[in-house]
Image (tube, rainbow, N blue to C red):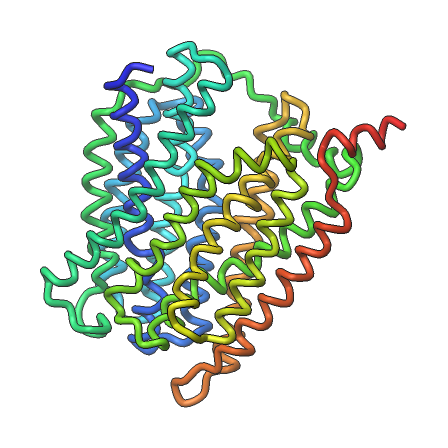
Length: 414
């Protein structure tokens, strides 16, 4: 692949995830410090997942049929910058909720569109399938590095603005930074290589309905999707509650995003080194089991809450679980779905897990934290025991039911 094009796509992915990573790891803690209840904080994150559930389909249709992808990307990010800035000025849960939904509707399509831009130009180079996947993996890894970099940028930004220790007063700093980075990403998008709509849109309008047939035609597919959905509801105990929890362990508010980058560093190591080795040596089933047991272990350590160094190191289990569960889920669906409906099958997985699962989880974790919080102090033991038990049950359910795709097809044929 031409070096210049590769660098441009890497910068695109870096900025894309820096925008998201500038606020996602810390906003829950900031809102808690501003006396938002657990239910209200969960509602804010639910708005985000609701936007992610709705708008990718609309954005995909626009770039598939009517306008160049880089033009849509630039416009959506500039508009999202305005929404992020307005969020930073809000002082009520309703205000943050409404504008978070607007931001999500504008930002969510860009996640898939950046992938599509990368694949479009990788395909034009004419690389082999293996080389294509390897090249995209490198480009996508720059997104994780962008997420990590955003934590350090936010730390410097908060110091530059002399933000108070817990960001209680004034504008919400992480949303201000998200607005600035969105402007940079929006302007940069206009310089990306042209990615026009397809001249012939051959997408099958019945593909999503065909994807539903996998519940009947693939042995164990329905059970797999149900387990994956239930496990996804527990993600938000990490995303939403973790900032407040870490602050309760005396970790300074402005250092929380930096501490949480341990998750992203472990994710890079797992994706780049461990997962390829384990997949080739042990297969999907054992990779899925290793990852699914990492999550309850992390929540057990959170419930114990000491020593603090162990809690901090356990954040790495999140990145490990991400690589060995979420990525393996995607690989499994890609393997069992016929080629003509693979995209729709992946959309179905995303809909049930990152969409509906995350929405439900945002509400559940907020209510659980609220129930176990008295006089402003949260009893974290029962809060984290619940997701520990549920993810452990999911891990055992995977162990009892999941089979490598080739084994399941052999049994079905027999």
